[in-house]
Image (cartoon, rainbow, N blue to C red; front, side, top):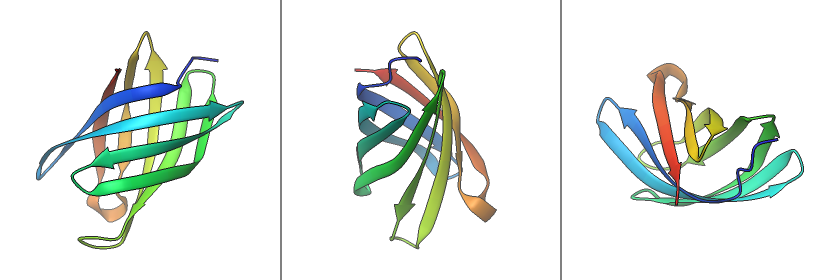
Length: 99
């Protein structure tokens, strides 16, 4: 299993611009929790899962409208690449680097 723990600087490229945020991941076996910090405030991820080098999780926001993002990423050599699915709003590329 790939080591995912620690702090990450991430970006999601959306139709309204690039969104930057940090993620501090605490792994526990094949699960993880994380604190996400960005211009939207702070979000706690409690449903993170890890299988090999693949991570999956969801994040829910309340403003500007209630929305759940379903995320999937592959971690390799200190980088994270994946997608963020925003339901009817589409999927957007996710990139991250270990801090």
